[in-house]
Amino acid sequence: MPDALIPSTDAPDHAPHELEAAAPAATVRKRPKPGERRIQILQALAAMLEQPGGERITTAALAARLDVSEAALYRHFASKAQMFEGLIEFIEQSVFTLINQIVEREQSAGSGLTDQGPRQAAKVIAMLVQFAEKNPGMARVMVGDALVHENERLLARMNQFFDKIEATLRQCLRDGALASASATPTVDAQVRASVLMAFAGGRLQRFVRSGYKRLPSEYLDTSLRLLLG
Image (cartoon, rainbow, N blue to C red; front, side):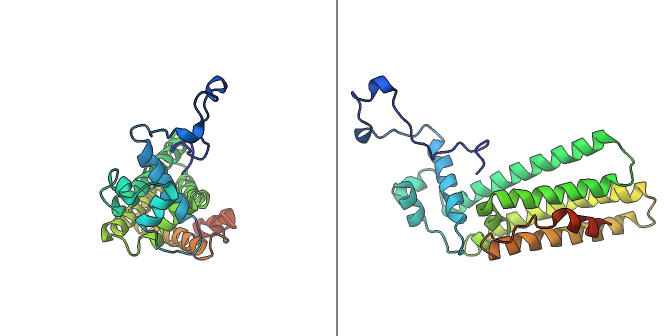
């Protein structure tokens, strides 16, 4: 997870220089602050998902990575499904916050422009694939690869995530179609939004299937220009 939202746990804590002799680090095990262990569990799960191969992650493997017992995991999450829901919440919050920023910036830049809708849509798709590219473990969750053997509600929630993005694209593109005096602005927007989501979904699937070798941002600007005209 990006450090700005989830604090990194990679760097070990060090005692001040003057206390090192009196309190050897090897004999002290620092208790995590409230909520910190929950974040560490989600970080570890995301990091394990970044490993190519698509193996199912077990709570035993996750506990071993954190050097805790499985019981310790369940003190913070009632089930593994709740752990995945924590990752999905991170994806939703990150992506929809960025989408809102894109729409607000474009609207403040000028209204009624014929290219405003397609430009907004292109920026939303670019942000989505770039987010996945920077967060490979999250990409596996987004395409459902990591959720195949998990609770069905997780897949349903990710489907709703993409439905909401497509609805945003339809609105952006409909506004653009109205500005360009299209005879069928609603239909035009629905078709183009559907094509854009199929393109983005395909790029994310290829990224995961290739073991993260085929980047979803490959020829992105050129592809979007072809799709949006």
